[in-house]
Length: 232
Image 1 (cartoon, rainbow, N blue to C red):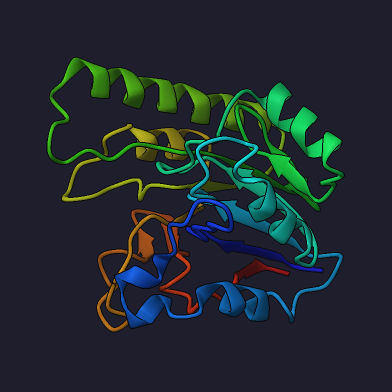
Image 2: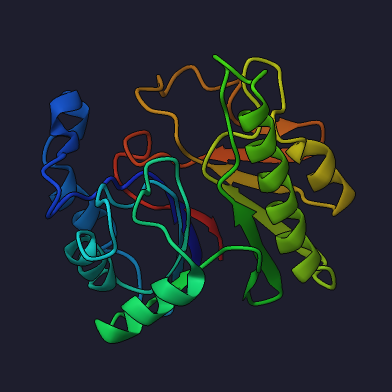
């Protein structure tokens, strides 16, 4: 029994948006994802940190979710910036139930537990180009509220891990004020995805312990499509 994480599967069984167009690093990535999960057990839990399917609707994403359903263990999903199929939790749960998808649960304004550890999180936000806009400020504020709701749901947990799609900090700015929020709730580990084509030899500023929080990047291409073990 172990807790894993991976982000950015970018599945596209029905949407014709294969990530293979982005170079050799994505070659045969669907088979590599499947192979990467082969060592997991039915008792394991994997958090999928956003950008799960290129589908524009739940219907278009069905085969992507059936692929995930066929992977070992429980999966907890959160929204990424390309998850255009994302809708209300009620609609998603109804869709999963109607299609006999039983291993996927949704992280959205709530938390889940892995033993005594609380799994918290939300999408986050990162817009270096135009963060001065009022719309972007509203999105960042909303994401901050969602993470707070998730952490508040886990208020009694001694150990809380935050799973976020966007990196919580980039170019020296914390766009959603996530870091003070994580400090407020005593978060010591933050797992994120979103970044691609990152040099495996040059991640000092992206990972490791910074001001008391251990940051882990789990973008699928960075992990060679093998889920990263977060804890036993």
